[in-house]
Length: 102
Image (cartoon, rainbow, N blue to C red; front, side):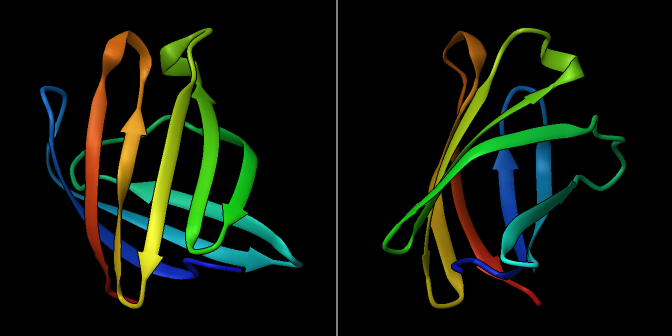
C-alpha cells in the first residue's frame, strides 16, 4: 500500500486557506482516510473507487455538504513528499503539494 502515514498539505483556495492534515492507514488490507482542517468541522466523506497505479493513489469521494456532487483526487507519493490535484464540482481544482509528518 502506498501513502501510509500522516501528511500535511497547504491549501490556498477561495474556501479555505491554511494547512490540511490527511491520515492514510492500512486497515486489514484496505485504505482508511481521515481529514482535518484546523478550526473547521468537516463533514463525513464517503471514499470509493480507490485505485493505485505505481506511486499514484486515486479516489472519488462524496459528502453531505456537496449533495449529488463528487470529488476526484489523484496523489503521487515520492518518499516523504506528495503531489497531485483535487477536482471538485463547478471546476474547482486544488493543488496538492505536501509532506509526511508522521
